[in-house]
Length: 527
Image (cartoon, rainbow, N blue to C red; front, side, top):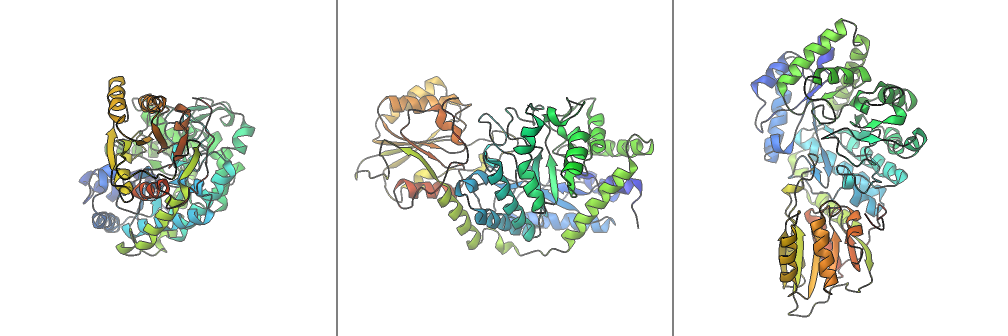
């Protein structure tokens, strides 16, 4: 039986809530009213134990069935690397590390493993992979989430990951269309503007999305960025609100038949005050099939009423809303045909071995003109292992949950390795104190995280090098850090701080494995 207008509109709403055990009454009320198509789970809101996650997803689907509603889409950002919605899953190093391996096979296998683990938990949509081409060293939000700066390689690896995810019964999502990689601000806080020509955008930014479509990707997520060359006369519209970008370019020119899902409508790139309702109506008019709300359930309730009323008054197309509901229903029917493995697949030996293989093949030696590698310290020589304490650099980051254990991994080969944790934002006085304390060590392995922005780390690195210390510099996240300490003569890139990467880095430092990775981006001469 065809949906009524209200039912069709309800299939456009992706909501979130706080709670690890069961959804709140307000959510269940919306579900009973047919105003929920699915939910998005977040680490800080919904993720406890693995058994708890599976229980929560089962509870959600049971509630939908009891309310006489279609099965729910249950989505999460499980990208690998710096963004893992479910933290107790296999710690894969992430997309830029995969690009450093140049292996389509590994990208496919990682996608398949990510998918199996999500399926075991009852999550059926992964907001991955990132298809943004990261060619801006000052991009604050994409970074290692990208497969790098080469659109052809990014498309190849994204397509492989999509095939792996969907082979495991998980709907993959290519994001953030039409490409968030060459921006220097974060759309969580404002709307970045991309000023390139349409020809350049089609050649660089859109290329990985074409490969994602070739791989059969079932969803594409929008970016809240202003792309002047694609916007026609509406030059100030973020792509999420632009019919020119979504209906003309994505649907008509590129021929995408799947679901378009908005990035979170609660982000600072869109108006959040009095103009919020109008922004959401514009997102519907632009061609979004799914509207993603990350925060207030009461907001979604009022938005739903406005969407239905606008459609009744002819301000929104009822035909478009019904077409969106048909696309959602088609995806849900596909998901119903997929099987669910047991929880034993999560962090299974096969997946942990795969994560280690990616890590081993991604560690990249950029230069060693100081000839410090492999490390061969004397029996009593000391090594300082200086690492910043991880912090979430954007809302799309779960790095703060990691505790890099490089010193412990290095002690497998040399007992005199001291862990020296430092702040990610060093003050000048802290730099001076650390420099003086580190003079006592024969070797210093120092990692940096976002030294391009957090220059205190670069200052400490440069002062240690100027003092003549034997320093091994490690860009733990983005390779661009190396441009902030150009005098470093031994430089390594790891792209991630997850345990398999720290273990593989220790192995490589002491010559137990080769440095096999290749740089996925170009390091500028200076920043």
